[in-house]
Amino acid sequence: MRKYFIKLFILLSRIVMPFFYKKDYLQGRWFSNSAKGWRWCWKCIFMQKIIGYNRKIPFPVSHRNNINKVENLIFDLDDMNNFQNFGCYFQNFEGKIFIGKGTYIAPNVGLITQNHKINDLDTHEKPKDIILGTKCWVGMNSIILPGVTLGDNTIVGAGSIVTKSFKEGNYVIAGNPAKIIKRLDAKK
Image 1: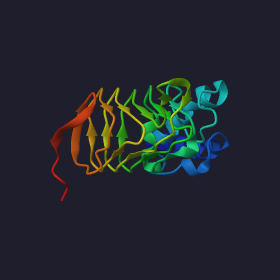
Image 2: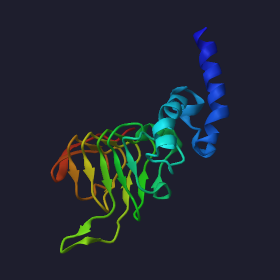
Image 3: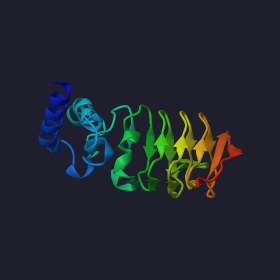
Image 4: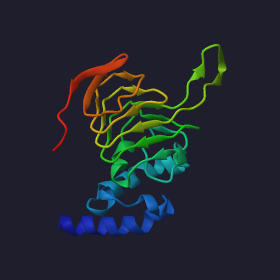
């Protein structure tokens, strides 16, 4: 009986959700092999589409997150889970944020592509893209600053502030500023 209701729920969701979200985003592992993506849609509709938090974002995103410009956010559809946490700040008005496939972003993470000028706080520095490699993990309460590139399989310890790039990958980094804590064995 439960399987029947899940199939009915998915069918209803496939019909209704394209009225609220861009159909291109309603695919991938969370929508094809699971009902979880559809539950995110239903959960997000009220705050996102009716109240207006992240209204212009064409995919389900928690109202407790802030995404500045969706066209400057590049990610794989299989990683929609990164937008369901709370407190994440994707500051990408002009700079781009690239999130590699299989990367996990924990709650309260800030990805910042542009800072204020030190001597003139009313203006900003030139934006610098952030690139997160594949299968990275950015721990809770971490901040990634402008121009940072993390290589594949990089783990950022909770509460870290990443001020420089670790392009080689296969590291655990942590601290303020983040530094290499451990080298990971490359996957065979």
